[in-house]
Length: 156
Ligand SMILES: CC(C)(COP(=O)(O)OP(=O)(O)OC[C@H]1O[C@@H](n2cnc3c(N)ncnc32)[C@H](O)[C@@H]1OP(=O)(O)O)[C@@H](O)C(=O)NCCC(=O)NCCS
Image (cartoon, rainbow, N blue to C red; front, side, top):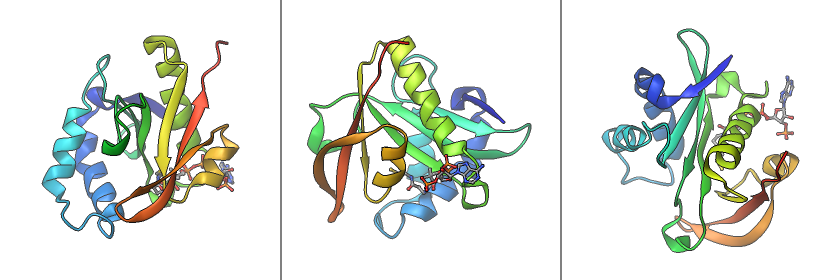
């Protein structure tokens, strides 16, 4: 498996966008596939946030994750964020999600000088906790209760 900038494999948007659109559709009924594609296209960057990465082999994409300056409209005071973490169901539980998160953390720390990274999750608190994330504060999104988590990125 490789992890690349989405900017280097933009063709994977055609696979990723329907996956992510279908996953979040119950909570975002106003969302459209076109809007999802457009959002991925804003992440086709190497240096300027937002930046997305993709886990893939030669021709198949497995999942994605992003580094964003902001993620929750209610918390623009916090930055930057790990967001857009998604691995397709058939590729889960083999370490791809944790590898994507690790890539975002490494790039945030080494290329962007980030010392504290945030994320929002509705239901993956246990998994992120196993990756070293801690509770920052509870937060609601789309009428659902979730949590903002944070992680201090230590120098190696
Ligand atoms: C959350 C998500 C990204 C995790 O992706 P993943 O690729 O399955 O993540 P990992 O494989 O790194 O870890 C998942 C579990 O598999 C386990 N695992 C990792 N490698 C494994 C292996 N080789 N064999 C067995 N289990 C393994 C991990 O320990 C972890 O266990 P846990 O859930 O008990 O902590 C994925 O489930 C997903 O896309 N969910 C839907 C979208 C979502 O909720 N995104 C997060 C939004 S905040």
